Length: 289
Length: 220
Image (tube, rainbow over all chains, first blue to last red; front, top):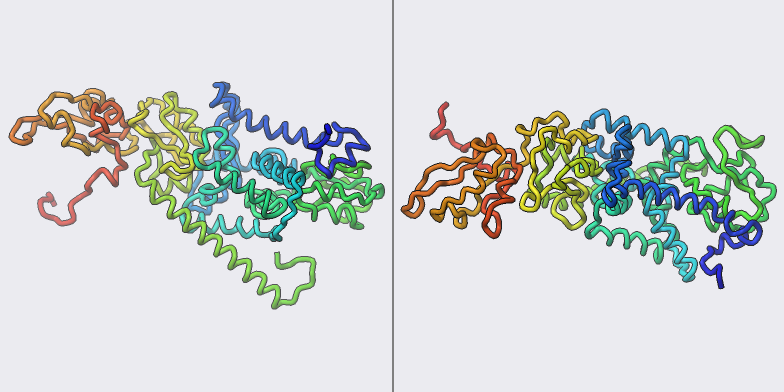
């Protein structure tokens, strides 16, 4: 059978809209993740230095420096006084995600997303259903804890364990024994709980989630009247709770929760095209504020 | 978090806040303990030129690797998991590739955070200090005239000199490091001919004795 690999949650959309349209955003996302990482790997691997550094801080074509605002926050908590380059770089990234959606970082850039998406896919294909209930607010607690630890030790504490930096840095400049942490995240997502890492524990995601509360580009359940209650969007969504108010509520059809990754999974998987990408401020008559 | 949409009595709200704060502290302390246990090991890490003192360095360096990529000699690398320095931080191993002391210090210039001082003059760099750790194996102590370390030193004539001495009743020429001039570039360690280098770069606090603790023999 040809389509054995297609996720169950996309099957309805594949049947009604075709294979490619049902994977459009997924393909764009993977393309984005691979090319961002690829740009950084071109230097060390092929000697083509379009960009330098890694996701923590980078030099883009010798023109502008970008920096990770969450790492900067830890650095400040650790008592460092960074130079202006770092601060401006972090503000630029913050600005970018204020536009494209805070957790667009998770869905479109973070390489761990590929690991956990794979675990989730494998979970579905192998019928593993074990799902230990984790509180999705745990990540906010961990986010707070990383800042406390940075302050206590005078270091950038989360960077000692962070699988997100570990993987991107590892792919760009060598990972050492760190692959074990990535494997641990994979197994956690595979056998312990659905979407355990990205949707419950990761403080990087929690940080960008806070940014996302105010970000401009949002998914909209614009044609929610057409919803057939098939459940595909809830199945595919890494944060299903964000869909409920937009799709089933009376207010704005925009997915306003900061937890939304703007991954477009719901847009891909919907057989009747309920969802589209929109911006805050637009979104139809029913909008509350 | 406590002010959710659900109606919540004040008591529940306070309990919720206390629980969250407790969890944050618990997590913070555990992570702090982990970090502390991890960085005991980096006492020996040699940092790029212009690096702030180790405690400040660890809070400022974001592990971006821009210094590593700026080095034309491949001297620096970012610590991988399981290596000695704090994971992701830049360091170098002189026995493999020493610092060639570029005049324009491209590594420090590339640092976006201030963890490396961009304005450092290379002669003022303090990556560590060379120490003759293995004098029993040092060929000069055996009466030969090796003196490789003295001859390869880029701060020739100032950082390492040969001083006349006596060892086991023989006149020898002792390679002597002058810590005020040595930048810790590690060229001597790289070229030392003994199996393991007899002269090695150590961070200053490991390599130097410091002032005496009593006043005897001091000028003032």
